[in-house]
Image 1 (cartoon, rainbow, N blue to C red):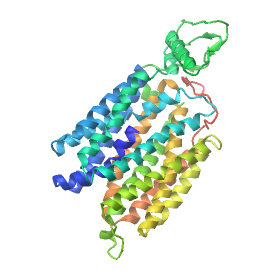
Image 2: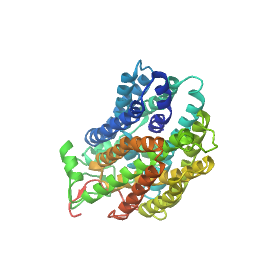
Image 3: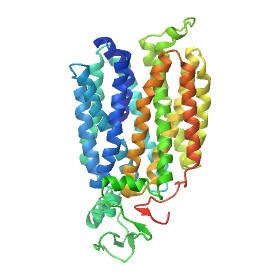
Length: 445
């Protein structure tokens, strides 16, 4: 939720800051681009940290950086300081994959897709809350108050850190058997049950924990190899023959999802504020309230998108779910190649955002499932970093082309990206519905 609010705020503070400080359009766009540049750095860095030093260390570091610089942004004395604070805050926001990978490693196989959709729902809650706050706060109190209030969920994430447990999969993979057993015991106590009898063993240590009978709680793995803890070895592993196809396809899908999603968000703002200039014969009044209303309405579209994701992901599988939603998102966006009435435009953006958030959500489930625990947060982090590159390019298209009255070119480009993403999904090597998570790379793959 905190990440969603800090990203969505970019749609609202730009025009207010531009007006107050007399910025150029390029300087306004930089406020968005610099955040995604920070997220690009953070997505990779936090993934390495979490894979090498534990998920909880990643959670803590991300929460500290994000909350501190999100709040400092509200007190920026000038444009340069605002850009710097937003950039470092963006580095913190890049840690989203650490949270999703950590959560995934606690969820049982049977309804993993459903619970990951529930996890993603908090992103949508954040977007709706941010649109509501902007509608209320900016016209009355201004952009600084919006920045300050939007940082509250970041501090909440920092407080809730102290209630988190380390991932037992991470502990097990690193041979910390006693710690793994203690976490499993806490989980059992929270769920009002007891651990099954058996021997907890690891491939990486001779340490064993035997509460009772000789039945393995976590079985050993054969024909697999462990991963050395080093930033370069993690990247080499992602690009190894076992994972290269998965990695490249994940990059393509994350790039396409980010480009499409943020493009629709930013186009909503631009089409709400720029229609009169580009279409002088249009009778549609455009003002600030229209902008906030349209962004709020299209944010609500994410709720049915999440419901659809929850229905499809564990029934038809990850890949088919994404193909269906890419196709429907393409159909809704296509009429916007031409100028439409404001009501039709908002309705089409509503539909396209509904289905694109669906693909975004399912990809966020699918990609972590594809990678083994040893490089999961690094793999998802790098894919997310590629998505941030799309986020950096997006303002140039959505803001630049649409505000320059090149709506047909902008929408056509988004459509091509959606098609390419849908094709990429079809080439993934495995369907992960109902499959167990792997812990280390299978050398026979």
